[in-house]
Structures are given as C-alpha cells and as structure tokens.
Picture 1 (cartoon, helix red, strand yellow):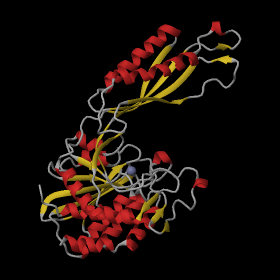
Picture 2 (cartoon, rainbow, N blue to C red; picture 1 turned 60 degrees about the vertical axis):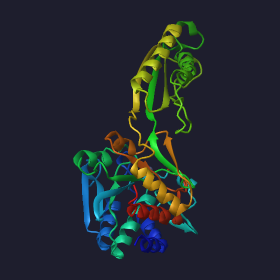
Picture 3 (spheres, rainbow, N blue to C red; picture 1 turned 90 degrees about the horizontal axis):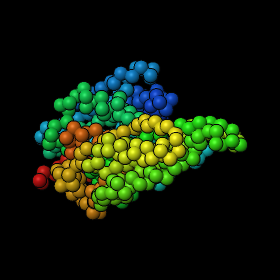
Picture 4 (cartoon, rainbow, N blue to C red; picture 1 turned 45 degrees about the vertical axis):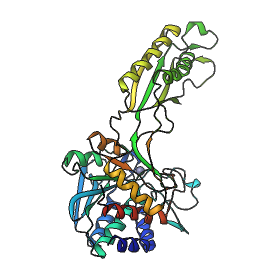
Length: 409
Ligand SMILES: [Zn+2]
C-alpha cells in the first residue's frame, strides 16, 4: 500500500512547482516586517485543500490588530488513519523579507525553476515542508489509501517573529491537540545530505549592556569618565564566561556554550568628545542544564569589576531570553521512525544533533512532547536567491509517507 503512495509521490514534479509558484506569489510577511501577515497565502492553501477533497480542515485565527484582516491564520488539516495516533507535520507559512533586491538574480516573489532547483523567497523556509505535507495528503486521498497513523498538517503563522500568533496561540487555545503518543515532525531545519535530526537546542540569552560614564572634551579626558574604554574592557572580559560554564556536549556543534559580544551601538559622532554612553550586546548560546539566571549573575560580576576599575555605572536588559529546558531523547519513537524512513528513502545514516536554538520545537518540548526537526535541504534560509530542490520536496514527502506506515516499535 505504501509503495503505491511512494510511486505517486515520485510523479509530482509539476505539483511541487505549482504549489511553490502560488505560495511564492503571496508574500506572507509579518507586521513587524511591514507585511499583512499570512491571510492571502492561507486562503490559497484552504482553497487548495478543498479542491483536493481534503475535508477535515480547520482554520484558527489569532487576533492581531496590526494586520488589515485582524487575525493571523493557522490551518490544521487531518487525513484519518487506521489509528487516531497522529503524525504531525508542522510547517510555517510566514516568510522573512527579501533584503536587498539587487542581490537577487530574479524577482524573489516569482518562482524561477532551473532543473532540480526552485528559487524565490520562502521556497525552502518553509514552503518545502508545506509542499511535502500536502503531497502526502493528496497522495492518500487520490489513491484512497488509509495509513496506519492519522496525518496531521499544521500550517502555522508567525514562526519568524516568535510564534506568539502561531504555534504558541494554537497550543494555548487547543492544549488537547497534541496527544502524548503522537509523533511530531518539524521540517524546518536540516542539511544537504539529510542526515541531521535536531533533537535539542541551546538556551538563548541576548543581553543589552549599557555602560554609562561622563562625557567631556577630548582634550581634557580627566574631567570625564570614558564609557568606551570601560565598555571595551567589559567586552574583553566576556570570554571568561567560557571558563565558568565549561561543560561540553558532543550532541552540539560547537559542543560548548558560546558567549559572543556582537553588536555595538554608535556613541559620539565626533572624535574630540569622550563618550559618556556605550551600548553593546552579547549573544549567549548555552547548553541545556545551565540556568539563564546564573549566566546573568556571572555577567553582572564581570560588570562589577569594570565598575570598580573605571567608575562607570552599568545597566543590563534582556533583548531575548529562551531557557531551553527539555531535549527529545534520541531513542524516542518519532526519532526512531524518522531515522528508519530517512535510511529507506535517502539511503544515508542520520545523526541526532543539537543546534544553537530558535525553532518552534522548543515550545512543544517544554510541554513535555517529543519533537524531531528534520528536512533534507540546502541550508539557505533568509538569504538572497533562496533555493529548494524539487527532489527534496518529493523525497521529504516520501519520508513522511514511510513514517505513516511504520508500525515497528
Ligand atoms: Zn523556518
């Protein structure tokens, strides 16, 4: 039975191109990126599902007054299996802005096809996941196939700007949606050979640090307190954190927690003024098991040394803080089934891995659910000339299809 489905999927090149073309033509930009959200794209997908006789469909609307329609849509579609146990495929409809148009070789909102490659904003992140899910759904319905497990597709809004109007809203409104023994796959991260299964994430802490001194004329530096010197001293101390939080975990690459000074705001516009305010940022990616509060404390201790040495005052602000508490066991059911399906379809040996953080899986893992993130893709999300391989859209669909029939424990 599943062989018939796999053969069907192999023939779907035209459908992949059609779906990608239609979705790419509907820029689903979040309001913080100056867009009107996902409504146009979601409406297209809703009508596609209807035309293709996929009838168990609901749309959830997260209220958002910043967009004209007043809501952010998430689509939940199900194809019933023999069991109610559900394999969920979670994809997101929103995309990031194109950036500088001149860097694109063709219009980012018009799909360009060249052999196995499709180009356009969103084709990989995350339309590939949506296409793979829709292909399997159509394959089941057109061929009258009932899989072992129910197929659940969640096409969610607002992944790129925090998921508040997307998966977080869905999980809050519908806590019963995901059952403990459901299988959850998020095809939103991956590598070119399809071997990376993401099962864990580092915690993220982005801190904004403001160093306040006293501004004065450059010719009389002793009359002021130079915030740049103090900030520079602080920035150089940050690497000491590597020695304090020094645990390693080979699941991750790099296998350590990282503490990296990144952004520095401009201070004075002219050379002959001693600055009185310098603001810089630290990007911390911390292995699970460390408490973010301990990181904050140690950063503050380093700051206290700077206060002692330079006589400045310092304030701290979290720009982003995501404590990653749970990881998905590498031997749990969804990872095991996914591992077998990848081997069968792509003939490679997958490897469970941890990443630097930032997928929707973290929210669900914190609810106690096991979530595997995986896709075979050229990692090029958010860049100009974003591309996706037709063969991967189809291959990933075959992996999903294979999992739907895998009853081995
Ligand atoms: Zn994404």
